[in-house]
Length: 356
Length: 42
Image (cartoon, rainbow over all chains, first blue to last red):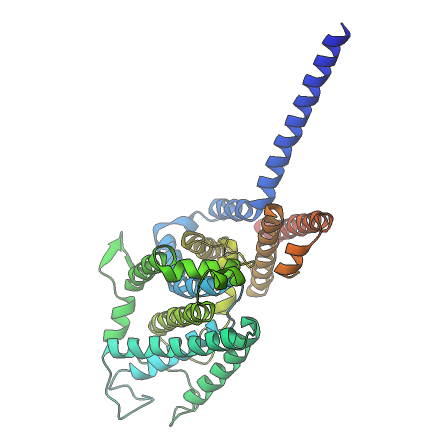
């Protein structure tokens, strides 16, 4: 009889432990995915509030906005994988956008910045844009790798330098700091033109460029030695060094690649916006960092996936378009943005501690 | 908290941090939801 009771007690204890384990797992799941649950819940609620939110034209608008921001997010993701960040991204985008716009203004435009300069070939300007981005990326990477400085402080400095250069550039000739517009038709149609429509809504060309860049980045991250080295340096630079990885070279190349991607973003943004000023690209890096963190690119280094970055960029963009549908004022949108970044970082750190 | 500090950190310290992080995450989600619901039902 006593034996039976003991067995029964043991069985019940086992059951309660099992229940506790199950509850614990559910709790962990809910906390780890709390941001995704909130964002998806918010998207469903906004769709109920305003059924136009997920209409074809709105979805294409969201895809276009996401595509415009995807290259910068992919660049910053590389820097975050190295346990760093890049605060200069937005300003590089601004500089590249203004330079591209000034070189590709229509020849008959009245306020042309370089009146005597003919409209240059698009691919030459694209090459200049990528080179400009790569140059600033090289400075960022060189200072980070060779002086052993934290990327935060290096990119803060370059951000200021680039902004200063941009303001000086906008004052060249008779421009007097005005925004640069009147872009050549060939340039705007190269970026904003479309060869495919869904219903009556055209899909702009830059969406396809963004997809091509994403595929290239996926290949670089996952199928090349450089990509493997990047993750190795991000997770443990000492171990990577001992294993024969050239840490300095990898850091410099990651920042240069990021710079090239900012160059691409600047080139696209220039034509997409149409009128470029010193404010172009302002705070773009914050959105990109938020998207990366939401997408699971970890600040502790060595963790991140391309699909995570894409999910982060799209989710963030859906939410911001949705906030406009809910008529939430722009000041409150900053608060929401900040909270999303804070929660995403806390979840990231929590996952890291649990793994430990 | 630096990566090295976490790596070298004591187990007990790490557990406390998880509780603080949980509180941060949950309160953040509550604030976000409150803001969202306020605008939704306005």
